[in-house]
Amino acid sequence: MSAPDVVIIGAGLAGLTAARTLAARGRSVVVLEARDRVGGRTYTKQINGVHYDLGGQWLGPTQRRMLALCKELDIETFPQYITGRRVLEVRGKRSTYKGTIPSVSIWNLLALHRTMSRAERLRKTVPLDGPARAAKAAEWDAMTVETWKRETIPFRDGRELFDIAVRTVFGAEPAELSLLHFLFYLNSGGGFESLVETNDGAQQTRFVPGAQSVAIKMAAQLGERVILNAPVESISQTSDGVIVKAASGEYRAAHAILAIPPALAARLRYSPELPVLRDQLTQRFPMGATIKAVATYDRPFWREDGLSGEAISTEGPVTATFDDTSHDGARPALLGFIVGKEARTWGARPEAERRAAVIASFARFFGKAAESPTGYFDHDWSNETYTRGCPVGALPPGAWTLFGAAWRAPVGRLHFAGTETASEWNGYMEGAVESGERAAAEIESP
Image (tube, rainbow, N blue to C red; front, top):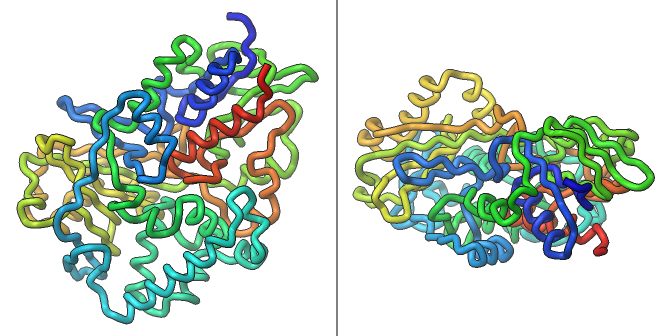
């Protein structure tokens, strides 16, 4: 193979988008993927002819790039099942409710509403192309979301419900997150409600063949330009190009795009070394912790009981659940999230113990019938060598204001993609696609 114009590291949605964009402009590209599959943080497991997503799973109505890709690639989608009442478990007490208003006291509801309204006002003041330019950036970046929450929500139940939302969205605890990063993230996805809701929100739509099908079809179009089982070890820059050394060989090109999480980019060797700001930023971009667990059943008993399959719990280990039944309704299933500190705890325990805890959670939410699944499987993203966490990397206090200038700025001939670099829908599949388009645009057309 002759030397390509661009070497792209990572065959997730960001890397594949960059490759397709460049190839369409006449550039020659090679995509190096460390895993034996494409898709990055989208991973679809097929069991008995049914596709189950163990990574990214949903589309929202404003995620225009992903919706366009589904149309272009002829990938069928279907709505997330939401019919029926939701389950709420707070400190051991179970209740159900309709719509989006949980069954807690009026005081907690008022506090949560005030918090959401305040977050809406604040997030709109954070520039999407540079959060550190917000008027109150220094103040917000010096504060954790935990501190802000305690100042804003006076009641325990309200605080715990807020924690559930934060953990599920970030895979992290409120004490780990910069308030500035939190507000930027909300703004990039259109607001708190947009991120956490199903109807008209980020969890509205599912993929019939699974979310990984998007990357699989994109990679098929690129053909031999995508090389699997090719973990990159080092990147060198010269006056006229880059040299990328991988397990599959050495690749010389004019430019390189790193379409991997910042935490993984930090583990590569660089010559010359990365600038201090860039290096320090990647040291402060930890991945969230998420385990997705799926239990299959012979019938959708929760639907029969008038429940939607959605539940939120302060008890754990499962924090949130969704109906995960196949698009045709033939294969009933429930999906549970173990996130944040619970994921770190339960990820270290044997699968059989984790299975028992997940099924016990489902039984508390949906009744005794949940104790008899026909199958169970889970996926701990923190144990993935080439991901080390999910759903996203997020910044702690101080990182944006001290090191944010290096967020996605090219370093010589190195360009940076990946959903963590997106200004729209940061952390989501939509953000990954946006970042791939931007990184490709940074490289001049021949």
